[in-house]
Amino acid sequence: MLSLYRRAVLGVAGIGPVERWSRRHGWRLGARRFVAGESIDDALPSLRTLIDQGRSLVVDVLGEYVSQRAAAESMAAGVRTTIEALARAGLPPVLSIKPTQLGLAFDADLAAELAADLALHAEAADGRVCLDMEDHRFVDGTLELLRRLHRAGARRSSTVLQAYLHRTPADLEALLADAPSGSELRIVKGAYHETADVALQDVAAIRRTYLALCERAWQLGAKVNVATHDDGIIREATAFVRGAGLERDRYELQLLYGVRPKLQQRLVDDGHPVRLYVPVGADWYGYFSRRLAERPANAAVVLRGILG
Ligand SMILES: Cc1cc2nc3c(=O)[nH]c(=O)nc-3n(C[C@H](O)[C@H](O)[C@H](O)COP(=O)(O)OP(=O)(O)OC[C@H]3O[C@@H](n4cnc5c(N)ncnc54)[C@H](O)[C@@H]3O)c2cc1C
Image (tube, rainbow, N blue to C red; front, top):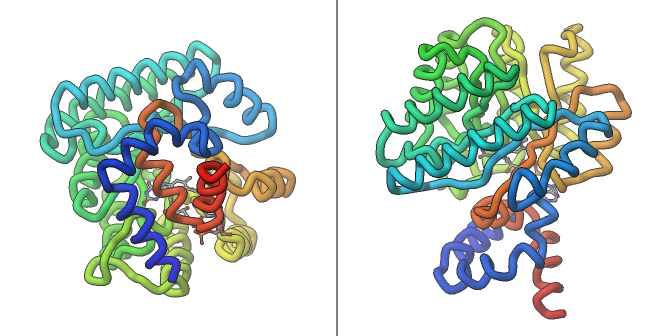
């Protein structure tokens, strides 16, 4: 049922006039709940508040699926400015980057060159980058991009694996066999509309796979970033951490800015390392559509805003 809803929302979001209208009005109608600011300077006060409240942050400079060299270079310049602004503000520049915002969809060498520059820049300021995982067409390219970052000396770079993809258990083995020891890895359910030939469709199967992936990654020595708002997964993953006697540096609980703030606070109060994924920037449309697609109640809030 939820998968039908998700397909419908993501389908409607892709229709030209809907997109144009939403880009004009969406910020006021709800995007700002999920995006900390349309620029890093706008966002900095909120970022400081979150850090004061005990959260760590990973900042995502919004943008994806660019198809021209100039656009990829301009995106990279925006990420670089953000790394510098965070470092100047005394905040660790930990960034999430979408490979297609750096041109992975049309020029893997360009994406690698831009990503290496950003990752090395972040590491020099005591930060690092994580490559977000996008739709299934980009998984091979993203994993190869990560290997190239490690070879370029950005050894703290990491990526994300999606529990819904059939290929992920095999990807996890290969990734952790290659990665520098103590590497981190974010595990998510997966946010894109994928068909049954590439992805699990059953919610319970995705949850089971999610937990199995976390446990396997811990067995293989990784730091696992458990990125979900799912109470059951959080409960079982933290029970595993306790039972296995893993130290705090072997896991993080990661949640999205603006999603389930009370849960975020409870996890901080319970003493878990909590990191928020904080999107920043004017190109919020695709990100916002995926958040609406995850939860009918979010779309209802937008509809209420439209209907006054
Ligand atoms: C830190 C982080 C990084 C991510 N990075 C990626 C990535 O690189 N690639 C990728 O494909 N996906 C990524 N995702 C998204 C992920 O794949 C899921 O789409 C998303 O987390 C929703 O699934 P869930 O695990 O939270 O469980 P769900 O079953 O969707 O949700 C669990 C509970 O949280 C509530 N909830 C979930 N989403 C919302 C929302 N938007 N608004 C309000 N309540 C909500 C639900 O109502 C439910 O009560 C990321 C998620 C997080 C938290």
